[in-house]
Image (cartoon, rainbow over all chains, first blue to last red; front, top):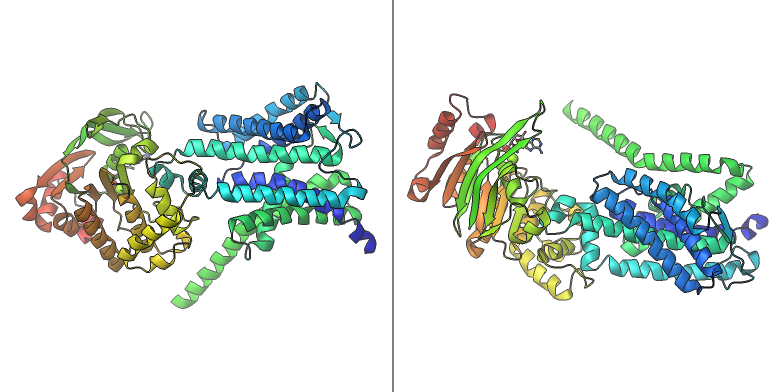
Length: 304
Length: 264
Ligand SMILES: Nc1ncnc2c1ncn2[C@@H]1O[C@H](COP(=O)(O)OP(=O)(O)OP(=O)(O)O)[C@@H](O)[C@H]1O
Ligand SMILES: [Mg+2]
């Protein structure tokens, strides 16, 4: 038990970094009600851009800013596919994601993997156990600032129009909102955040990898859904919803740590994740069915 | 002020589902006109409104509002001049957003949306005054999600939203049809109040013949994608439901008026 507890900080830190990425997923999946698969690519883009720039001598904050911008560009491309080419959002994301695989390899000079060492660079976060609490503290501050900024942004006129676009596109257009522009903006913002998370993870693990984003969307959805199931009833405020997304990601990584300790093979992890997320995605649907059946039965009784 | 010239619209052209929804509609509205629109199911009433608002592009013809040709203008740009209330109470408001946020979105119709606050304190006070007029107790629920409101309450809020920013034209598509009779009457009374107060030129689709006769200064009847009657002034005031039924029967040349019309 003590052994387990002492191994907790690592999944917590990991969960927080993926929580940042899940906040990006939240912006498209929950605010815009779009399923965007760009993230698998833009996450790696963020990592690749960061590592290449930092090892090239750039200041880490500036590198992270450029990672963010690179993610924004990826989101923009998906947005254009979706709104200007009329391609369904999900397919637009798949196209960009595929393209990004080549782009990410290019960024890393043709290598699938580029390392960055804490010995040579003053990185923000690291998975080394001797600095894990500092890493967690940095993540807490980072997430607090991110949530504060998003809370402010979605309360502005522009933020309102993005929320409204996701909520009711017909109403939005009837009130003069360019829903296509809003969708593009949402995708831009979301992938920018996801790329930032990629930049964080590359620091945490000490390298960027073309495949580091594979399945990111699933982890992001897992975090969003776990957060909603666990805290949806108590956290109603927008900022708290974002907190619950991060908590969802942390829970996800703690569960993963547990199942790995219980003997699940690392190779089977993605299978496990996909099944769990599938299950959770199904819950609202089953709930509505059960609800419906109950209602029907009641009505039948009332008729009799 | 509004001029619709020879507007045509065919859905799914060239397929077995081809449907000629509008076949040459001509209509000129004068400033301050309050026009009620009647006609059977599928007559093209909603399509006409959708052409004005730009939900679908027109196949042929033009739409001119106050001298400006808006035929090619995208929907969100026309919105500046138009206030809309839909048949489905869910359509006119964002259910996942608060009452004040919905009103604030409407209050910015036609304006550039920046990074300034989405709702200001001052606006919230104004919204409270506006909502008080509805007498639905909504003035104390500014921060409630609109999704928690009843259909009638949502429709009343939508009506407030549609009349904000002084639209040139108010377009109502059977906006009381989904409400229970009592609520419908209330929303209709509110409509009358808003229209007479602000003198907005209004186009109101209804299936209720009595309302169509009682309200407004002009009545048009549509059939098969065309306007077949256009009655105003004294002539309209003296109309009776039976007259309309007769006109309707004549128009559909022997076909019986549909049930919905008979019932109302
Ligand atoms: N988006 C669409 N796609 C295909 N056909 C459509 C579409 N919208 C309307 N139509 C068809 O065009 C015709 C006119 O429809 P419209 O909705 O304008 O009728 P309406 O007069 O509003 O009828 P109702 O009283 O039932 O609302 C109908 O035959 C309808 O099926
Ligand atoms: Mg209709």
